[in-house]
Image (cartoon, rainbow over the protein chains, first blue to last red):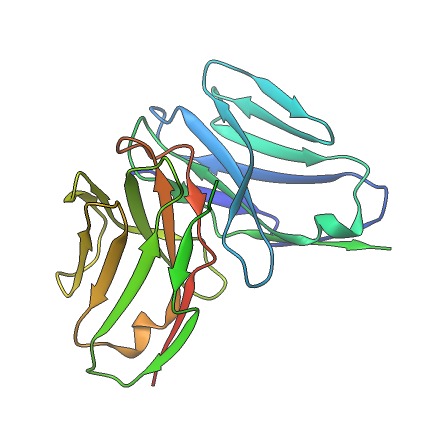
Amino acid sequence: GENVEQHPSTLSVQEGDSAVIKCTYSDSASNYFPWYKQELGKGPQLIIDIRSNVGEKKDQRIAVTLNKTAKHFSLHITETQPEDSAVYFCAATPGNTPLVFGKGTRLSVIA
Amino acid sequence: ETGVTQSPTHLIKTRGQQVTLRCSSQSGHNTVSWYQQALGQGPQFIFQYYREEENGRGNFPPRFSGLQFPNYSSELNVNALELDDSALYLCASSFSGAHYGYTFGSGTRLTVV
């Protein structure tokens, strides 16, 4: 089955800097890659997703890139703000099967 | 549009007891998926309910069971609780059996002592 690895496990950046979180997946059939943000005491919230027919997707300060050949995808957050501090999870799925999540990255944005 | 609501938010149970967790899906969604999130880990799929039937199951033993009601709300039942069942239980609603477009609830924090 699918296996998703996520790095780094913790990340600290200065406010205004960029943050990058990387994930690799094992199943070449995976074609849907969402990213979730989880704040303390809340459930995961979808912030951006990408499908395998697209190499990059942007939404304001957030972007995701996908390299199908290398089987990895990354989340890029530019101009970070303190409210970006949270745990971020990547996930993958080969078709309409349950999401397989990475272990998460705790992002701290230091003002 | 109402989001996904879960109850209770926290509970403490003793090993060997049984527990029922509840989830109301987002308006317009007819599918509920349950995930277990251990401390410091990503969520793991337990099962999904669609059309009031189990529609896929992860690697969890039969003592994890569920129900879906005609109003699309769902229950997760866990029998013979073990210490390792301590986790955050998340419910996600979606449409037509999909595993994309999830809306997650805030979860139920279960502690087994």
